[in-house]
Image (tube, rainbow, N blue to C red; front, side, top):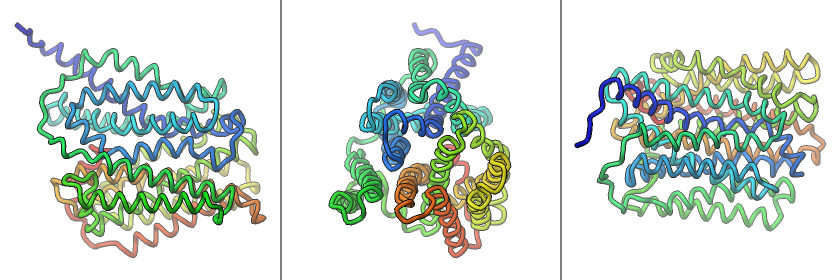
Length: 474
């Protein structure tokens, strides 16, 4: 006869489960930022250019964003614990492979596999958390902790990445592996076993995930090649043509599949579609800015990786402390004005960096820039979630929030590629690569702010419930 757990044992198991799931969420978020401050060391060690270097970031976020929705569906079909454990194991193996990379190709493939693994780990972890914690108030607290670990992972990733890069950039690749494998060892003690599922096998849209990810990878590849060989090069326009063909194929697959990964009807909601575009652009603008200034501080000013990571992490304090308040403000006054104000502040911070660089002490510049940016991002990030979910039906909130966070990740990869291309070609046009690249981010933010205001609607819809759904899937 199976012995039931005592209340004390249940609390211990529940606490351990929350710790393990939050660890996985922390690792997924940390891996986006940890590598950023290590890029100059990777560039020097592997002897690769800036346009190739950006793939170390782009491959991860494109794999993550491209497979995130499918990852949730696969977890529902095959079992949350099973998918969580297998994908976390793959995450750890890919981490080791990245640390052993002897060239750009090996590194990029390892990063892509790692991003895809994270795309399956994240939704499975969230579903497991919901099954472990049942009481309403306890679940709300657990969700808050789970979400906070994602933000903390991204912020601390810059600090940890900078610290370990002083020893070797390869440690940034592998630092999460021991925690991933330790989580795998402890998981059977706390995570509930999988039971039968009711999701039909025909619900799997593997072809949709494959075509959209290939389209994005080809797009980034074409843009990257253009900076090195020019837009007339056969590899440039050939790759871009293939990217367009894959995108058309993706739309065709989604239109015909009985259970599409991304139902095209979702895009009939104008406010939701607008929010996806805003998320794609303003998040990508930040990733491009971070990429350029990381190279500047280490290659030009000779800052250490840790100093660079610490300077870029200042904004995280604003995001963690102020974002919930701006979410409430967006619900009350409407998200468009909050988004526009926040993105405008981000654009102003980028412009300030260009204007003040060389004229003021670097510490003064980075402090002022991070204050402006941190406030702006704390405004825009939660307000975009409110805007995206305001007019979405309750039954579609989970899918909509997954699509939103896919847009964030995909924007990271695509806009970063464009920024790197500008950086790589600026000197041929007799322009400063740092100024040109960061000005691009500033201009992009200005466009996003205007675009948001032009499309704003007077109502907020069901923003409160939808924002909660978005946070749960973020």
